[in-house]
Image 1 (cartoon, each protein chain N blue to C red):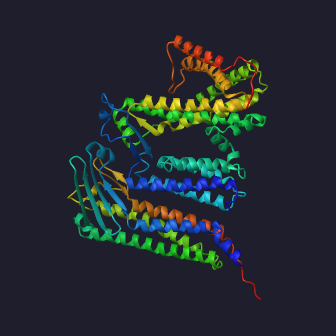
Image 2 (spheres, rainbow over the protein chains, first blue to last red):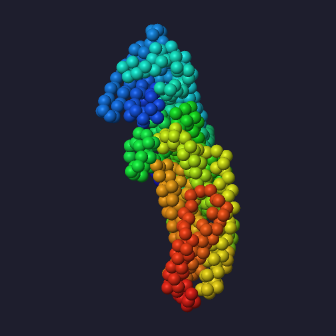
Length: 226
Length: 376
C-alpha cells in the first residue's frame, strides 16, 4: 500500500501541471514587480550617442526614469508619481484607476492559480477530489489575459493627454505623440514593459496548465456505495 | 513514464520551449533584440576604419518583432511548443503528428532569438525524432544526422551494410544542401544590401537586422541540384579508387550512402547569418573551411567503414579522390555556372595542379596503389 502511494507520488506525469502552474504563478508575481509600459530613446540613438533615457511605468503607480550617459559617466535616476506628468489632474487619477484594475485582476488570477496548485497537490498526495479543477487555471488564464489587454486598450487615450510621458528631469516626450500602446517617434520609442509581457506569458502558461490538468486527471473515480 | 529512450526527444522539446520563453522575456526586458558584440562600437565608420580589428555580433531576435505586439504572438508560439512537448511526454501514443507542430513552433521562435538558438535547435531535433516515435532518438533520421556530425563510425558502418539507407542518404543530401543554401542566401543578400546602404549596414551590425526575400529561395534549388551531381562525382571517385585500385569488394550503394551522410557538417552553414562582422568574407570563409574540413573527416571515417581499409590508405584515397573532386567542383562547376555564395577558389591553375600532385604523391606513400592490406 505504502509502495503504491509512493509510486503515485513519484509519477512525474502528475507533477507536470503543477510545474507549469508554478511557472505561471512565479511569472504573475514577477509581473507585479516589473514595468508595464516603457518609453525610451531608440536603440540606434542609444548606440550613436551613448546615452539612454528611459521611463518605466510600474504597477506601484510610479514612474522610474533613468538617464545613463557613459562618456562622461553620468547617471540620473528618479521615481515620480503619475501626477507629475499631467496637465489635467483627472488624467493621473484615470491612469491610477487603470493600473489598480489591472493589479487586482492579476492578484485574483494568482489566487486561482494557488488554488489550482493546492488541488493538484492534494490529488497527488491524497486522492483526486474535484474532477473539474481545470476551471481554476481557466479562470486564471482569463484574468491574466484580460489584464494586459485592458492595459493596452485603456492606457493610450490617457497617455495622449499627458503633457509629457517622460519625467521632465530626464526629457520631454509629448503625450500627444502616443497614439498606441506600441509606437515610435523620431526621438522616442514606447511599448510594453517586461511586466506586461510576463503577465501575458503567465496567461498562456496558465492556459497550457489547464490543458495538462485535463490530460493528466481525465477522470476522477466515482465513489461506489457500499 | 520517461523510462525509455524515446522520451528523450520530447524532453528536448520541453527544454527548448523553456529556453524560447526565457529568451522572449529577455528580449521584452531589453525592448529590442539582444545583440552581443565582440567589443563596443558606436558607428559603422569606426568598424570599417583602417586598422579596425575583427568585430562580430550575434543577434538573438529580429528588430520589429521584439519591440512590437508581435512579441506576444511569438511568446504564444513558445507556450504552444511547451504544451505540445509536455502532451507528447505524457502520452506519445497516437500523437506523433503533434511533433510537426513542435517543428513549426521551433522555426517560428527564431525571430525572437529561438531560445538562444539552442532552444529552436532542441525543438527541431526533438520534433523530427518525435515523428519517428517510438524509435530511440539515435536510430531516427535526425539522430543519424547528429551521429554523422559526431563522426560515429558505428553509424557509418550500419549505413554501409544496409542498402535500404540509400534513400535516407538522398534525403540527407537534400536537407543538408537546403540548409546550407538558406544560410548562404540570407548572408549574401544581407551583405549586398548592407553594401548598398550605410543606414542598412548600421541596422545589420548594431540592431540585428537581416534581409530575407523571395530570392533566398533560389539558392536551395541551385544548391540541391548541384549537390546531386557533386555527390555522384565524389562517390564514383572513391568507389573507383577503392574497388579498382585497392580491390575492395564494397558496392557503389554503400559508398554513396556514407558519402551523403558525410555531407552532414555542411548543413551547419545555416548558421552563417548568425554572425555579421566588419569582415564579412573572413567570417564566410571561416565557416566554409570549418564545415568542409569537418565533412572531409566524416568522409574519412565513413568511407573507411564502407571500404574496410586501414586509415592511412583511406587518407590517400581522400587525397586523390578529393583532389579530383575539388578540381572539378571549384575549377569547372562553380566558376562556369557562376554559383552564388562564398567559395574558396585557388588561382593560378598551375598552383592547383601542384597541390594535386603533392596529394597524389602523399597518397602513393600511404600505399593507395598497393593492393595488400589488413583492415583493423
